[in-house]
Amino acid sequence: MLILLGDQMLDQNPSTAAPLFEEWKVNPTERSDIVYKHLNMLQTTMDKYDVMGKEIRNWTITLWTATLIAGLIQNANEYVLNTLIYLSIIIPFLMGTYDGIFKFFRTDYHKKRNNLMKHYLDNSFERNDFEFPDYEGKNLLWEGLKCFNPFSTHYFHVSFIYIILIASSIIIAWFHHCQH
Image (cartoon, rainbow, N blue to C red; front, side, top):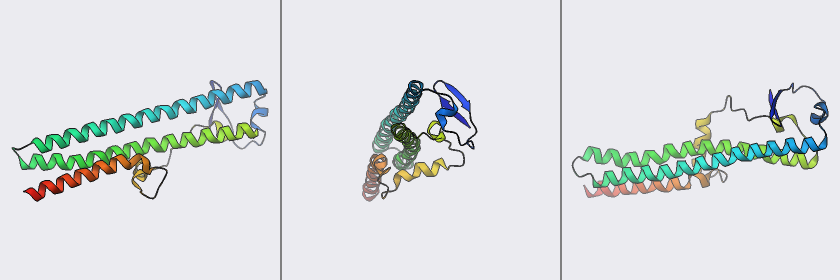
């Protein structure tokens, strides 16, 4: 198991019962520096996921608008028109799932940061405070799809824009088919 200690990676056995910093012979000043560096790393990672989420939402709106406009101004071929309108439904769903996966990662780092802060203030560190998140065996697609659950208050704010885009595309497609 890899544990971040300052700028070093240590391979530690989780079965030992000795307190974490006593085992590493770390004084309180070094402990504060280690915790600060680790908190900084966690916050930097969370900030990166926030930026990626914003970029995904920006690209979703751009692609959705482009496909919808291309579909609505396309007069020559009904098949192309329908394909573009249906693509405007699929794009927000796929990008929303992708954004939900990043939200899942960010939430995991957020939990680790809060636990580390709590344990720092209580002076009761645990080994997993300094471990990197392990996603082995997790179904990331399922985690991304959870953002579309209207009963999940934690993820639903992420998917709200995607749901609006999908609903708008369905309404536009319905009006288009009613006209023909």
